[in-house]
Length: 159
Image (tube, rainbow, N blue to C red):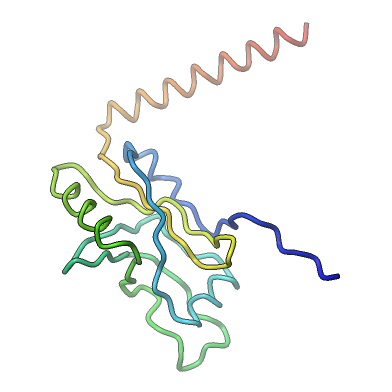
């Protein structure tokens, strides 16, 4: 009897700077329109989404700035590694996101690229509001104090 694949999602790439630069509110899952060689390339090696962003043009959602390296055995079927890729979401979701993006300071930020349980490439996007420098400092100070508290509690439990 063949072994079954592990259920759940397999992460490809995460945007670690997104939570540092933005206050993330709502999140959505979107499919990505990719070619076959792009999917094979993603399986072969990870891609980079750290400097990417999403835009709405003509009622469609696009992912800009993602670099998917060319597939090693792709030949003439390889496409431009930095091309604009269409995201697949419901029309009402795109209209809702478009309304939110017209508010100053809001941006649609890619958070994580992963394979879902059916081995399809999905992108988790979040509606983020840009943080000011003092917000970033406040978050760092809070994280440091939480770390100190955890360290003290751990030391206390050892005694």
